[in-house]
Each structure stands twice: as structure tokens, then as C-alpha cells.
Length: 322
Image (cartoon, rainbow, N blue to C red; front, side, top):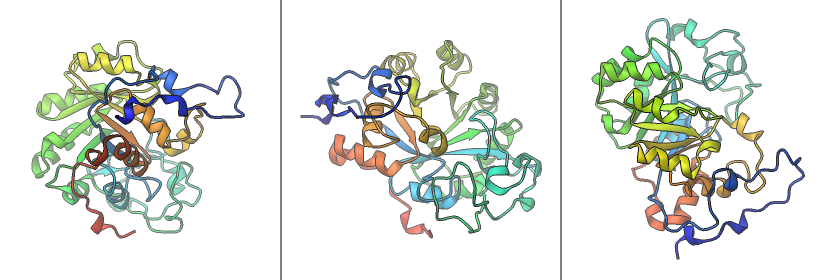
């Protein structure tokens, strides 16, 4: 019997949360007690790498994720010298880049050139999950370095554009590397950036990012720019929304916020990105999941799909230096 034929009765927890906070994730996503048949195994992407194992959006973090994941999601900003770097920083999912929490600098990374980037991280970095980097030098990688590290391979990269003036720089960089385009997806909350990418190179896969609450016109918006995928925040990734997206010919990825925000989100039936949490999301039938704990997500896939739950590419774990 498939693990997906198992009832979700085990997803009940005793909590001391208020009634407003005690909400079932399974009910929110409309996942039924029984799943009639297991969907195909989704890809696992490490959110900013593997932030519970290494400092987020760095090569060590991406390499740590490669031990368990099929790919990574990374955030990209252009610098004043047109270098593309991987960084998130302080701010909302849509507007970020401030270096105050991570480096004690109260300005955006966009105001610097590569030679001016600081090398040490502030100990009180607010959204950190990993403790090992304290008092250590943290290198903000160039996107080109990441592409060279993993190419050529079938390691999936989701490149999220966080700023304007990135589109031409990115398409130019992709044309100069040996990284296979089918394994690259460009995403953004700023959908005009994706339209620009498609106009520059129609072969590049793009994905519209949506936060919660979900825009009621999310499918028509995605279709209007010719996007290939839709990336929905996990709490809007209902069975119905996944079905609607697939009927519209769109791939679907469920994504989690950074560790800091996720820690504050409580559910009555699952923990903070634990195995039960990932199992509920997998039951929606998504094509990809973007998570902060790819090692935990891999365990769930192995439990459900057995040997087929193994990651779909050869790890670069031997390159790890952390």
C-alpha cells in the first residue's frame, strides 16, 4: 500500500495556541484524509541553499543542499559594476537587499560594486538559521561562480530576480555559460521582469511568484506573460489551485519563506517544516517544493516513494568545505 493511501489521522497535535492560531494545514490546503494515488515525485529545491547547515545564499549553502536536494533557489541582485550576486538581505519577499541585519550596513547591496562587498557577517543577523558562521568570513558569491560550480549538470537552479536592470545581464550571462537552460527557471514577484526575460530569450523558463493572500487573477496574470510555471506560497498551494494551474498547462512549485518567518507560523497538525509539514504539501500534487530543510524533505520522499524517492542527480558533496 502506498504511503499516500494512509489516512492523515496522525496529523493531530496538542497545542496551547489561541483559537486564531490553531489551524490545520491539511484543511487549509484541502488535502483529504486519503489520497487516491500518489502523484509523481516532485523536485526538492533548497531555499537559498540549506540555511540550517550553512549561511544562506553562499556556495557552501548550495553545496550542502546538493547532498539532499535536486536543486536550489537563489536570489540575485545586480551591483553597480553590473556583477550579478546571490543575496537576499533584510526586507520583504518582494523588496529586500538591505545589509543592516547581515552586515550592519544600513543600505542596499545594490549601491555597491563587487570589490566593495563586506566579507564578515554580523553575529546578530536576524533571519539566520545556521550558527556555524558566526565570526567567520562569509563570501557573497557571484551568480557566474554558482553556474560554473554546478555546470554542466542536471542540478536545477531557480534564479529569483530581486531588482530591475537584471534581465539583460542575466540573459547575457546564461548565453555565455554551458549550463543547460532546461534546468534553469527564472522567477520574480515583479512579473514585468519575466516579460523582459522572455522578450530577450524565449527559451528561458520563467515562473510568476505569488505571495499570500493569493491574487485572484494569478492564472491569467501568469498566462499573459507566457510564463511556464507558477510559484505559490505553501499556504495557498491548495489541491484546487494545483489542479487549476496544471489544467492551464503550468508547472507548480510550493515555496516557504525564510527560516525567521517560518518559525513564527504555527499549525495545529504539523510542526515547523517537519516531516508532517512536507507530507501535507506533497499530497497537493505540486511539481516542486522549495524548502529550508531539504534534508527533511528528502526523508519524506524516501518514505513515500522508496528508492524512487532518491534525488535525481549526483551530489557535489565531496566539494563541501564546511
